[in-house]
Length: 331
Image (cartoon, rainbow, N blue to C red):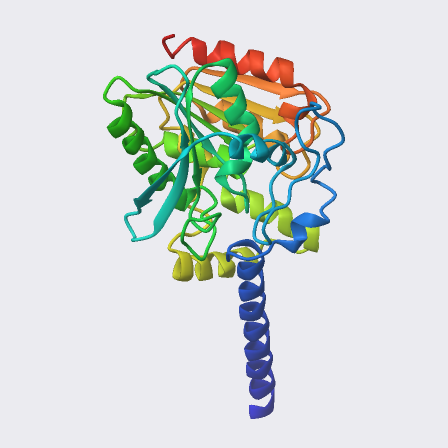
């Protein structure tokens, strides 16, 4: 009679071991700071086919950086300008780095640009160029924890980063003064980040948010990718990997929700997404838009894949952003 119990116990032990191994595997793939090979050959991430002639087609990046298409186009522009390197220490002791470019004409207007997954602050150079040259803004481009020159051995997916961005906001206010007018603009994970910031106690100096192709929640995004890339069901891998992430990185997937943060948001928010985004599916932006109770607009760029909205229709993108933030930021 004992044999069936021994066999059953052995099977349970084996299955548990497999589940633990899978959890560590997916933690290393998605959360741990390392090279993200699954991004380089992902059909959901379009290659850059065309752009302005004064922007480089390719950019050499380090092996832990995988920018979205639009992020690769402006790094040379950043490096051609004189900027200050800012540093701060997070509440949990990490040293973060950001790059600050003061406007030619002194101004209270500053944009804080939030980069995407496994990217870095300077990769937001295309947006920096727009705000700096066309709108006359100061520009701050932080390296998120676990990215670029900032410390951290894991990716926060916006949730761990939301409080870091509050520190960057306060640093801008410290430099500019109480009259500072701040816009938060993020792409992909950066879009989710600025939405997650919106549900916190944000200083009155933050006037508006622009989010581009951000996801509804970390759980939703990773569940979607787990099924799309690996053809695996969410349960129980998502639950055990989330637990491992909580142990190693201090957050779990279910709490990291842009949707829930937007329900508390009081800041005007512009939602941008490509109609053909299959990496962060376009349907997510409609759920985000509905969750937001503050002043809001939505802009769907026809034919744009993930992170491609700015490249596909740069003119309309800039016009929409300029008009939207112009309602809330004084000239």
